[in-house]
Image (cartoon, rainbow over all chains, first blue to last red; front, side):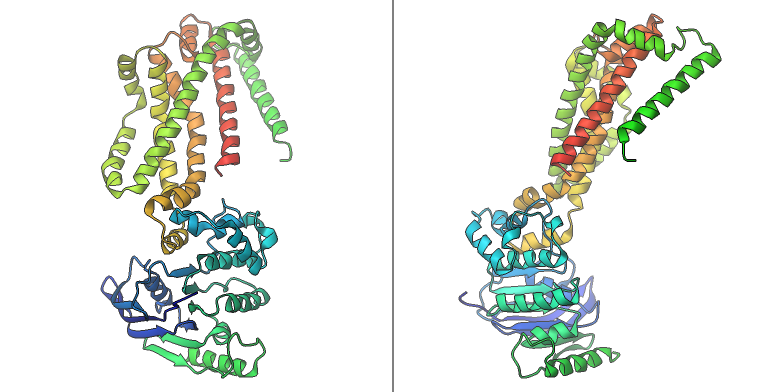
Length: 241
Length: 243
């Protein structure tokens, strides 16, 4: 992967003239994981959608830009809370969906390789409804990897998983998406602290950076420093606006 | 129920018993209400006559159903693809539904003649709206997450339509087709009543006029069974390919 850019968003978002968030100035450094936390309704998902260029309701009075000044469209992959697998396609066809949608020839060998990396090699021909929740999210991760984009936006991708599967998926994603610019929205302080090179807390008052342990992510689930940071972050979240 | 065919058979037996009971209790003459036994007998003795007319009706229904499915499907995709088409054509479609199909039958016969095509047109007319409407609604209900994903992947609206919205909307298309399988015979029969020299509808009208109520009932039963089989076949096909 060459030329991974950092991301930045600055400005104010409004829905029908009503302020949603801002004025904000958020940046996600190149090749690092930035985790974005905050109460519901503060506009985290909208922020992600504005960066992805798919927001139809909120209007950003400001700018989204890449640190290399090149346009972002075509350099972003998105992974959401729902796996968004097409039920009529089998796993490998879901993984190759992007190529199909762009009218390009799908690279089946590479898709098979990507499925191997997420541990779904033997599930390529299965349909999504025969997979478990964790396997479905692995397939979604494989589809995201297949896109091979420099910037990856994650919108609470693991929040519907059980604790063990979630921790496994976090490690897997941290491994497979390293060196990419990742912006992840999450509700889980533990997840943010485990995975973030940078953790941002978005509230009605603005955006602030949360202090992190010195260790490099992904931090162990029982890392004492990480657990302390997680506790501090949770207390910080519980302070009323 | 573990054996649907058993309950269906029991239900049919019950209906026949009620029918026979009605004939016996009221003592109605056979030219007003024939019993199931007489109708079964007529069904057998006039089988060649009924079959000859039934084939005509079946062809009308199947052609109407196929054309209605194609036209309805294409209209739904066109409407879903274009907001302009929606604002221009949807009011027209709703208005067309306010016109009773019965009232159009004589005109269709006038325009298309006494043959096959006026009945096909009638069947098509009656199923066009339910097919279009069911498929269109499904196309407009594509989960937003899928559309967002496709946009981030750089898909054109045209490819989103073919690779996401149409496959996602096929179950809706299927429910339209299931309705159509039941409505299409009604359309064909209306067409035959208004002007025809062949078909089950024509045979029923003829038998009724000659006080051969047993023959009318026999033709009616054949039509009902055909409709049930058609519905079951369409349902099976939809389950296999569309749902």
